[in-house]
Image 1 (tube, rainbow, N blue to C red):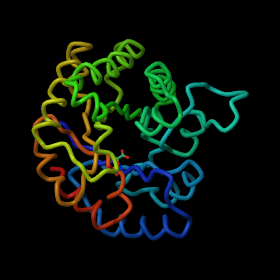
Image 2: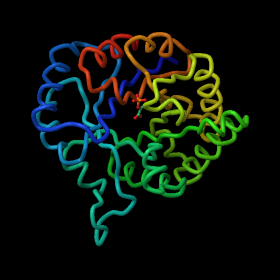
Image 3: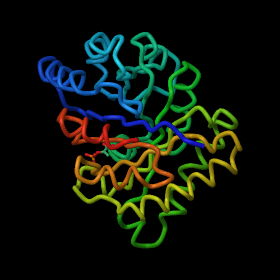
Image 4: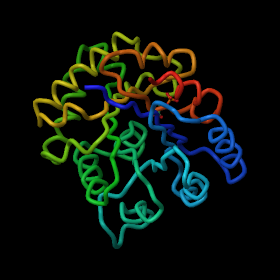
Length: 248
Ligand code: PEP
């Protein structure tokens, strides 16, 4: 089964009205009829600006987080229904920076994924091991447990997610998993998806972690790498577009 790849940019906490406008101009000028689906996950205050600019374009709007709660006394939170109001198609859930700096647990991540799905938004569920865990030979067990928490919470609706394997040691560090290292984890995740629910074998599994214009083609050529989640390189239009072009 040929899966259409997804290249998603994660702008993290970067940008300004002026910088976003310039970046979007560059992206829209060069994206053309990309073989891959393309998305940008932007800071919440810029959803309206970016959503308006992307209207009618081939680039989808994404957010970086969503509340597990539907509404009410959760100061500072943004609900899935609010994201839906702005035409958000994808939302990152459980990014390692949120797990690390905001105490998000597997249970929180699963609840957020469920909240997104119930609003018709595709959660991009991020999982990955730390360097200490990899060196201790725990990669498979760690990503397996992170995956299982989401699979148990979602049941058959697991087929509506995107999975992103992001080794924590590769995020923002310039260290990339080798294509073989990434492929090995992705193949394991594909098997877990199939075991959880046969229809979920077609769920896209993105790789994230210092993917850039120079290394994207080799990573994206692996049979179980169905796209990329791109941080730093998504802030430079030429680099991001090179990655998009590498996704066939
Ligand atoms: C990310 O933030 O998800 C990420 C992969 O960042 P970077 O590409 O900068 O490593």
